[in-house]
Length: 289
Image (cartoon, rainbow, N blue to C red; front, side):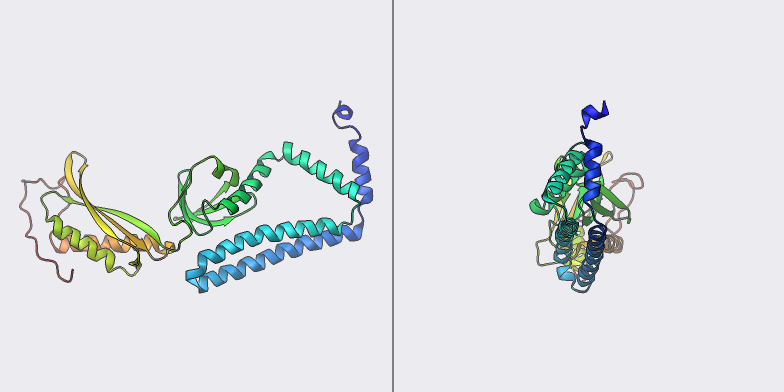
């Protein structure tokens, strides 16, 4: 049965091995090793430059991704040429690899082609903050087989490239260094809404991580918190670098909470406060807003 399925397989393998020569094999191994070392050096250099020149960090990360693809392609081609095989053997190897990839490694082949599609189509780039499959974090690398995403709690998630061709992915900054951050704050409907909004505005604009060259705003609307009506103040502003996302959110939240407490702006009436059940603290005018 095996002879019917793969006629002459043993003979072809013997001929292929006979065509190989030790110097050529050694040269190919050396080429692949040098390619691997070269990729490591280029990646480390560009990563170091990205740390030094922060405003070019995402661009340098993208260059590193493309460089890895190009260097591996060139390295493999040179390694095959170093074997110095006859054209007939190369054609046989190409056919064998095509069959092997088509049947045994179809998922790997799909991931490699998907990786090339990601590089060309650019739905996201290295350094982007993306949401995919319930995960949220920064794209650390785009490889031949998979994408590595580092979550905000420092977990590395490896996702096959072909998954991105069939499922939706959301990019928060789309290649830009800055990113829009949205934060919600809630106060009671009996509070001074104008004062509350001024305090939120002052908190986001006095933050050292805010990027004021892009528009910002604080939107006010009524929502239900449990069974109680509340006022939601939605702060929308840009952080100057995505790596400061959590530091920005933490600082703004602390500033808003401190300002609300200082100026007597109370939260919605849910459990601890009734709208008419307790005396409201006097509201003072903000200072420096």
